Image (cartoon, rainbow, N blue to C red; front, side, top):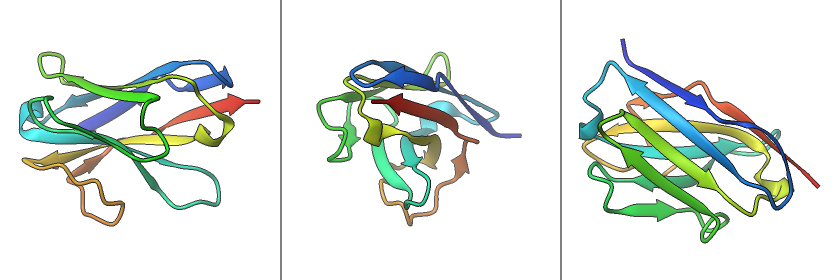
Length: 124
């Protein structure tokens, strides 16, 4: 059974930092591109960041470029999202997704697996 479990969310003040983790199990992790998406209340799901299978190519949504960094550790079956200079507009549920032998940054694309999400709240 494949599971993606996000952790690391919480409440932080504007300007602060958080690091999210997404631990995968039940799949051959290094064969999957990994993505982070987020969804705020009343808003559509938004692409945040993605990383390819080997971790040497990364992609970011315009709203997080220069502030967020995605990375992965294939030995630990984990993808990370380091979030710095957080803003109230970053408040959302953050989800990780796995894409078999690909990276799919579109919010309308079919992703192979999704995590359950972790809440990030940034206070002003």
